Length: 186
Image 1 (tube, rainbow, N blue to C red):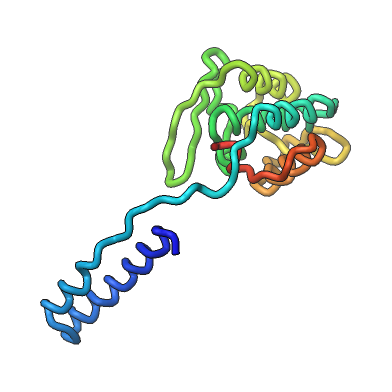
Image 2 (image 1 turned 180 degrees about the vertical axis):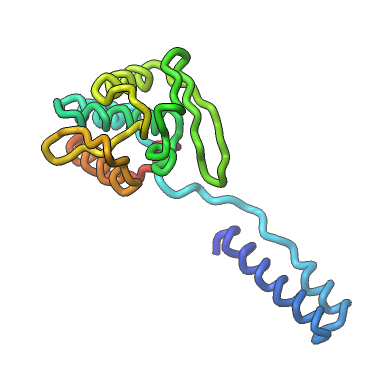
């Protein structure tokens, strides 16, 4: 078993042993002896993979070849996810108030109500600028859904599943092996 699995199991066993000791079903000496088993040290290679520069370039080329608003939006999302290490949920919760076009500052709200600041540069800055020209600068979500006719639906924000779907679509168009959205963070 992996070290993480072993340690999770040991933690569960320690909890049962503590309850047994508190209920008087085992002596304190037996309890101390049993819980003194050391945790396992070690690490494993994380799941997933890193995208190469060529794969990222192919994804952006696939977006550029799409002349609809979806191509512009998808290029901006891919650029942000890659350059800022954003999760799907973080992308869809971004609003216009989170972005300062003067400085390229982006406030990201992540898991556990954590906030972090990141700055856009180079390709990500240009891709987001192109998207904002198409989107407009009115308040609301930074990324809107786009309907089948290619029109921006400023009444509906994107969903995490929509981000997953657009990445799968662009990967297929670019001839890139399948990858998870989280792989853009690696």
